[in-house]
Image (cartoon, rainbow, N blue to C red; front, side):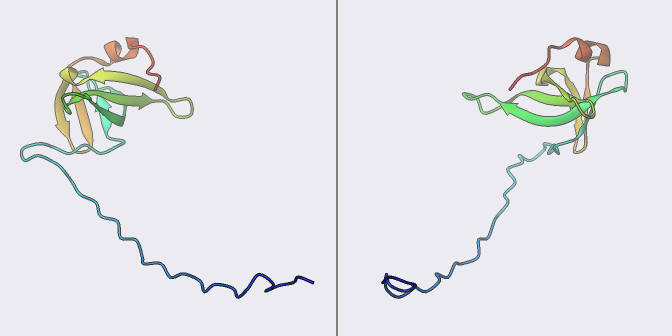
Length: 110
């Protein structure tokens, strides 16, 4: 009664095509790409955090804020408006405000 194969022949194992992922960069000419984890410093040259995320306005599709994190185990995230950016390089963001002001920003909750 019943047993292996009692439901009919075992169907052949399907073959799958390899998935090819493609990375596209959409970096406008004359701009600098930012890397996740880029160092963020205040105008006093003190490290205030690392770039965690770039936020874009839903309606404008332009960058509005940076989410930066600071700390080793219990990371605190802060929301920094792009108007505070002084200079951008691929692996560093320098702000036009001091580290003291960044320290007074409320913690960012996603």
